[in-house]
Image (cartoon, rainbow, N blue to C red):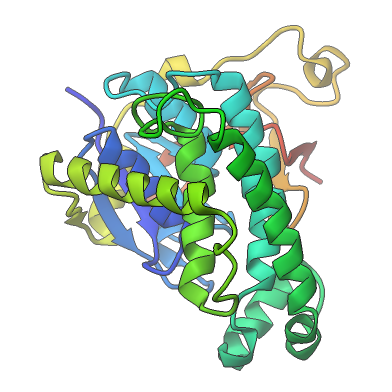
Length: 323
């Protein structure tokens, strides 16, 4: 029996929307636990012991994945049907993580309508970023942000100009890939702000590609087992499923050649902290049970002393012995 997929997210989360599109295109039914836009999030922290600051979080049975990039890798391995990894998978993951999810997304966030954001949200995001957000300075700097975004759009436009067929997607595939979704969700997010209304005017191939992707997602939604509608689930019911499932041992690998293990900076079975290295630097504590070049795996204690396996990517995260 396939493990239950549970998405922890709030509706406005752009990365949550990206992961929903992944699940729809892969034709995977899933449950959804609604969490607040801002911490605290008891469905994660109290029920599962997951203190990770970012959203979304994806549970696949007992295995809980802290980053969309790692969650998609797991989905591709555990559910290989309808793959998004059909072309240049290493290039896709690297481009998604270091370019689309960081460089492009960072510029996109500068185009948010910060002057319309509630004070509580700005304060929370200041804490998330590690410095006070000056909304007026960001708005004043908007032409620079729009100019920077045009540079990214020019790269995408150039790539699209090399397609062998105008109906293909960004890596010249006949169906969408993960890189298509990673780039498009950010660009659609920017378009929804309406703070740069002429941003796409000089990039007709980008506009046509976004329309193709939208059509592909609509078609996948129509054929999805639940028409893309998740099973809404309470935090308590979700925790019962997570804690009642067995971890996937294939997702927990310790590499004897890993330098942090070889040099005894870390030891399997010891308590460690896993923390993003850019923002949202809230440590996730747990007992180290797996470590390799791709991920760190922690056993984390939740409500009632029950445990789950929490997975964090190595790229963009630090792993240190707990003090």
